[in-house]
Amino acid sequence: LEQAQLARNYIPICLDRVLESCDLFFHSDPLKIVRASGQYMYDELGNQYLDCINNVCHVGHSHPYVVEAAYKQMKVLNTNNRYLHDNIVKLAKRLTETMPPKLSVVYFCNSGSEANDLAIRLSRHHTKGTEMVTLDHAYHGHIVSTMNISPYKIRKNTDGVHPYPEYVHVAPSPDIYRGKYRDCDHPGEDLGEKYANDVKDIIDKVHAKGKKMCLFIAESMQSCGGQVIFPEGYLKKVYRYVHDAGGVCIADEVQVGFGRVGSHFWSFQIQGVEPDIVTVGKPMGNGHPISAVITTKEISSSFAKCGMSYFNTYGGNPVSCAIGLAVMDVIEQEGLLQKALETGNYITEKLMELMKMFTIIGDIRGQGLFIGIDLVKDRKTREPATEEAEYVLHRMKQEYIILSTDGPYENILKMKPPMCFSLKDADNLIEKLTVALKEVEEKRKNGEFAVKAHGTDKCHNTVIDDEEEIAIQDVRPFSVETITANGPEEPADLEQEDTPTKK
Ligand code: PMP
Image (cartoon, rainbow, N blue to C red; front, side):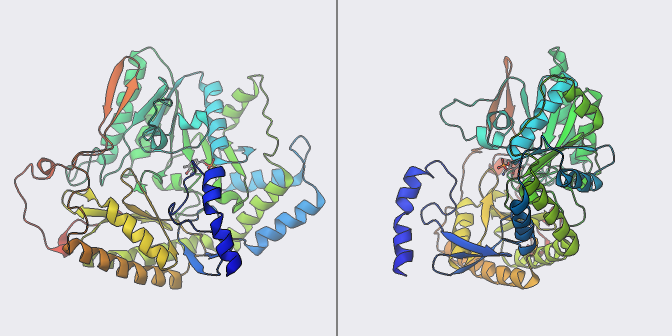
C-alpha cells in the first residue's frame, strides 16, 4: 500500500514532464493501470476496472495467443521489410481476403496516422489532384498531414497556428440526430441524399475554381464525431460524386474495423461501398503498433512510378506481422464478430429500456460493439447534457467501469470495448449506469445542473475556403425557435418520444 501511495506521488511529476499536453483520462485523478487481461484492467492497488472503451486491445488485453506469437517471432528474427519474409505476405493475403477483390495491394506502417498520411500520398500521385474533402468533427491522426483533415482537432486550436490549408474542404458530418439536417426537421426525407449533395456542392465549387479533386476521406461510422451512424445511401452517393470528379475515396477503418460492427468485418461494407483505399490500425496489433493501407493495383502502380520508393523502418516487420496474423486468428477462432453482434444487441436493448426510464437519454445509436448514448437536457431541443455526461463518467469510474465521452459537446457516452466483452459485463454496466442516471435525475430536480448548457452553438465554425468564407452549420443552435417553428409542442409521453436513430 505504501508503495502504491508513493507511486501516486509521481503523478504531478508525470503530468509536468511527460504528459502535459496529453489527453489523460480523468485528468484531475488519473488512473495508474499496471496490468490487464481480457476486458479488465487493474490499478496499482489491485482494483479491477471493466474496460468499455479500449478498441485497440481488440481481442482482449494481453491475449495469450497474441503474446505468444510475438514472443516466438521475437526470438527468431525481427528486421525491416527490405528482405522477403513469409509473415508479411501471409498477413497481406489474410487482409485482402476480407476486402473487395479490387483492393489487392497492402502497405504496412505503424500507426493510424502513418496509414492515413500514406493514403494521402497515394491519392496525390494517382489523381494528380489537390483538393481534399473531409467530414466535420472527423479525426484522422496526429501528424501534420492528417491534422489538416481533422476538424475534430483544428476546431480546438486556440492560437491560430493550425488553420485548414486552402485545399481542404469540410463537409457536414451526416449526423441525423444533431447535424445540419436532423430527422425531426426533415421527416420522411432522404437525408443521405441531402448530406451527399453538400459534398457535391463542394466539388462543384472546386471545379468552378479550376481545381482538381484529389480525395474524400471518412470513417464509415464517425467515432470521434460522436458515434455517428450515417444515413442509408450516404456514402454510395458521395463516392459516386467523388469518382465522377476523378478523386479517390478513402475509408478510415482505424477505429471501426476488424469486425467491431459485428455484421461485417469492415464498416464500409454496411454502406455497401467499395473504397479505393482503406486504412487500418489500432485493433490490428491488439496494442502493438501496426497499421496498413490497402489499395488497388492501379493506385499502387501510380505511386510506384513517382520515383519515391516506400521505406518505413518498422512497417511490415516480421514481429508486427506475426502479431497481426495472431489477431486475425483469434477473431476467427473465438467467433468475435458474432459475439460483438450478440453482446452489442443485448446492450442496445437494455439501453432502450433505460431510455424509457430516463429522459436524459436522447438517442442510442450504434452497431455491434460501437455504441453511443447521447445525453440531452431536453429531448425536444436535443440540447447536449455535457455536465451530466461528465458526472456519469466519474460516477462510473467510482464503480470501476471505464467509459468515455465524445462528440462536439462531449455529451455522448461512448462504448467500444474489447470484443470479448460479455453479457455479464453488460449487466454490470447497465446496473451501474442505472444508478448513475438516477442520481442525475435527482440532481436535476434539485437544480444542481444548469437547465441550459449552451445558449448558442459553440461548435458553429468558420472555414476559410480560398477567398470565400463558408460557414459550416452542421450543428444546430439550440434555440427555442428551432424547435417550435410549428408552434409550441406539448411534452409527449415518454414512451412515444424520439426513438433511437439506429440499433
Ligand atoms: N483515424 C482514426 C479514425 C482514429 O480514431 C485515429 C486514432 N484515434 C487515427 C486515425 C490515428 O491513429 P494513431 O493514433 O494510431 O496514429
